Structures are given as C-alpha cells and as structure tokens.
Image (cartoon, rainbow, N blue to C red):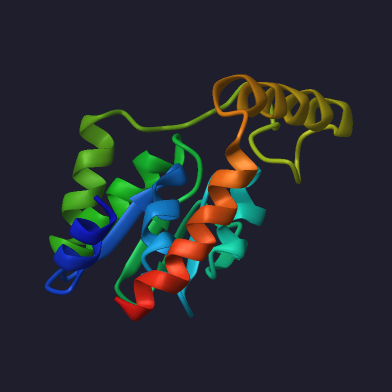
Length: 153
C-alpha cells in the first residue's frame, strides 16, 4: 500500500489527508519539508516521521493539504472544493449541507479544553492504543526504519 501511495503521488495535483491519514504520507516521505495537520494525539508520531506538525484545522502547504481530527474533514473538503472549483461553489456546498458549527463546549482541542478534560482524553487514547495496538511504539519505530529504507529502494 505504501508503494502504491508513493507511486500515485508522482502524478497527483494534490496530496491530501484527513486525521491520521497523513501518517501514511509521511511514511513514504511525502511530507518531508511540508507542514501537516493531524489529530492532536499523534503530533509526536507525525514529527518522528519527518513532517512539520501544524495545529491548524486545515493546513495547506504547496500541494499538500491536510485536515486535523475527523471533524476538520468538513473544513478540509470545503477548502479543497474552493481550490478545485471556486469559493462560490464551496460556499454553496456549505449552505446546502447546513454546515454551521456551533459546538456546545469549547473543548475541541487541547489548547481550549480544561486541563482535566485533556488528561482524561489522553488517558482514554493511551488505553485505546494499549488495548487495540499494544505494540504501537514498535510499529512507529519500524515505520521510521522502513522510511529510511524506502528512500534507498
């Protein structure tokens, strides 16, 4: 899959991802010297794979466009639509989908959430990683090693 991603990227006008999808792009050197958004819990992982982490909901760096967490995907889609079609088309789509976010709380990122909420979320993420992918740190280390090998092959 990683070889396919790298291959199709060679002719792509845009190389994009939402949430943790950028980890695959970074693993095949497509984010070296590029800024990229990722879910905040994976900032360190993305940096370890050679990307420059951005905390923006949507990051546009030349032909690389990335969205942070999954809800940033809607913002991401509207940005891309404005680029490939027009701002008017993006605004019409926003209206058609009635995208008018009004979250009941301001805890959508670690910078605005209360510290105790951030701590609980981090604990849940760690528990999820430990349960679902207990060897995630080893996987990351192998990905970094493969990335070095990928350059040479």
